[in-house]
Every structure is written in C-alpha cells, then in structure tokens.
Image (cartoon, rainbow, N blue to C red):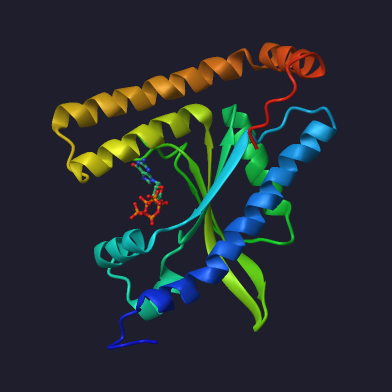
Length: 219
Ligand code: 0O2
C-alpha cells in the first residue's frame, strides 16, 4: 500500500517481481546462446552471464542522484533489471551485440558504446537498454533492462573499481584515480594483445575441449 506517496517494503516487493522474472528469463536465454555455440563446437562469444535486480537501497540512492520520481521509475531508471555478458575477446562483444539486435524477443531502445567512448574513469563496456515483455498472470508487462557486454579484463577492472568506489564514496584521491585509469589502459592493452593471438588461442581451446579439458562449466 502507498502511504504518503512513498513505497513501503511490500510495494517494493510487488514492483520488483516482474524485474526478477525478466532477469531470470534473460539469464536462461543468454546462457542458452553459449550452449548453442558449444553444441556446434564453435567458439562461444559468451564466456559467462550474470544478472541481478538492483537492490532497493541502490534504486533509492540513484533516484536522489538522478532526480527520478517514484512514479517515473519504470520509465526513467533503465537498469533496475541488469544483465552482464562476459566475453573473451573485444570482437566477441560486437558479435554478441549483433545477435541481440537480431532477436525478436527483445526490443533495443538504446545502445551506449563505452568501448569507443571510454568513460573518464577508464570504464569500458557496451551497454544496451532493452524493452522485454514479461508475461504476468495479469497480462503482459514491458520491462526495461540494461545489458552490459564486456571482456573478462574489462569486468575485472570494473569490479575492482566498483568496490573501491564504494569505499571512497565516489571521491577518489587524485593519485588513486590516476592509477585506476592506468590500470584500465593496461587491461585494454591485454585485450588488444589477446585479440592478436586469438586464432592460436582458439585452436588450442578447441583441441582442449575435445580432449580432457571439458567438465568445468562457467555459464
Ligand atoms: P550498479 O548496479 O551497482 O552497477 P549513471 O548510473 O548515472 O552513471 P546511466 O546513464 O544511468 O549513468 O548509465 P550508464 O553510465 O550507461 O551505466 C551505469 C552503470 O554502468 C553503472 O551502474 C555501472 O554498472 C556501470 N558503470 C558506469 N560507469 C562506471 C564506472 O566508471 N565504473 C564502474 N565500475 N562501473 C560503471 P550503477 O548505477 O553504478 O550500479
């Protein structure tokens, strides 16, 4: 029940339920893509997939920071449902994006390429905002979700930077900000190097997966 326009615990539960449904469904679908490549004995552009519904405290913090009204949340906050796709190589990211563009079950609303347009922090990733229909007992509801596509190296950097950001509350000392930027460039250098030896890596991986390397499943 809404009291004084503010959502209470039960309201949040009700509001977030379709978002959890969307995240769960999309995780299955994206992980299914990896399985299909493996089934064809092809290199999968998807290494692993994670997903989450933004915690209520983070939603509330972002509402204040971005001046989003509660009754505009569904339209104005695009990452309440969030999916992350991790790739081995930078080229894989663009292959994943192409596949997502061609799917009939998701509608792409916006794309933000923070790989070509690196954020000032050093952050790199490809962001896609989608509209995804969830079937509820009360009918269909279209949910906005954000899919972040990044390499393992970009993910390593973003994960570490995110936890440091939490510690420093977004106010990094100048030296720390500089070091993080350098680390982001080093991570991208690693991605570039890996792309250059990609063919050899893939041959080795195919051999390995046909041999004794099978067994560990990450997605
Ligand atoms: P979470 O869920 O904790 O990751 P804004 O959120 O205001 O920065 P906008 O326009 O809503 O910007 O979306 P944007 O910048 O396309 O994507 C926001 C999300 O991208 C963030 O979510 C992070 O997941 C990721 N991101 C963007 N910039 C950085 C960065 O500099 N470092 C790291 N580690 N991640 C970044 P949230 O909201 O922070 O929440």
